[in-house]
View 1: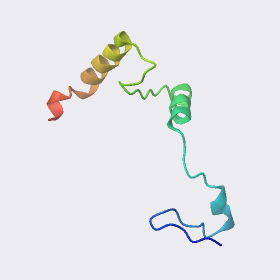
View 2 (view 1 turned 45 degrees about the vertical axis):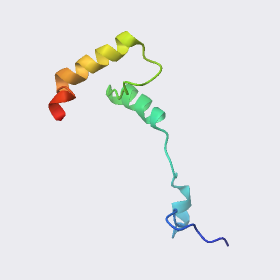
View 3 (view 1 turned 60 degrees about the vertical axis):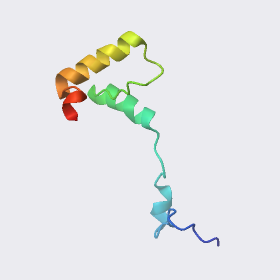
View 4 (view 1 turned 180 degrees about the vertical axis):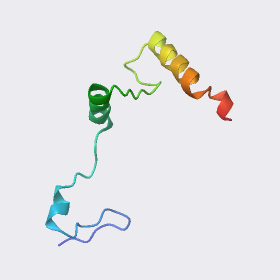
Length: 72
């Protein structure tokens, strides 16, 4: 049996712990959130967005949560 690296994940203490995923991709969670709850999570630097899309998202974010300058 190999020893875990310092600071790394530990071996699960029970057999069911082996079924828990170690990482989850963000995109499937974002897609399910949109489909199931109409919640949209968007990064302004997402390469799938064009300039007009980025500006629309930025405008909506500023309207709902304030501008970035207001946070400083």
